Length: 330
Image (cartoon, rainbow, N blue to C red):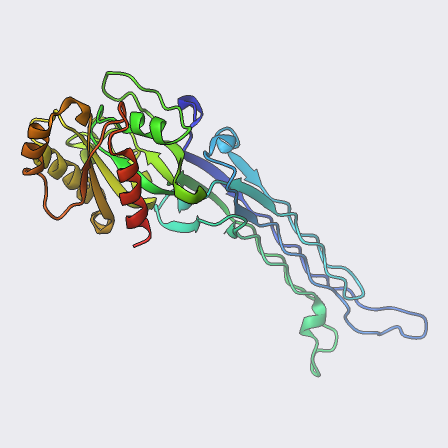
């Protein structure tokens, strides 16, 4: 994904169609001047619908499409003819898209499956024709219902990437390098902080033609939940990952403390993130000899599966894949 093309947040105006009015027509024919009411119902106004599309990765196609206006339903007609429904607007969105009310922030719906269709903004109901209101005491009702108006609202669409494994770590922990080694993804790699400004996805090949999806999330720093660094903008992408792979460089002055900072930032953003399975990878371990590695191993959290890796020399990369696969299918 090119950084300028990764759009994970858009605000759009949705206007569903007005319902058609019911008809107040009376049947007339030769020899039957008082045939009674035969007004048909109005058609429903057009919905605005979201549909999941696994081939889409961003909301870029909606960035400049700010107003979506569905067609109104047609009025009912004589001889109990129902008006045509207004044409629906179907918006293709990537899997993991969440729709929220722009004013209240309330979650409206969520798209997680290919081909899943959910109504974002329902069209107005068509009005009933006068045929519905006839009775023994009112055999010639001269009224019918008007159609219900459509809904005019602003909606926020935000994308939360769906991946099996999310890479979590400080800037320059080696997340992008790992992704480039284990998948065909080509994230930007450089020796300065915040090289990754947008999430990157890669499909990691495993044994026997199996695979899983890995997401490289832009680096977190202390205070990210309060807006420092890149802030919380990309933390929401971690919410959809089955497993969190924490990556900390072996040259960190205090690996356990750094891990604690990362956990604290995730907890402040969303405490439920701490319920996810976690793994720890000590990156750049090609710089360590056996003695230093054992010394660092003694400082690591004992309740967390860990492995020393090197993307440069492929050290323990297959072991890391095995740990991820086992955690995914535990």
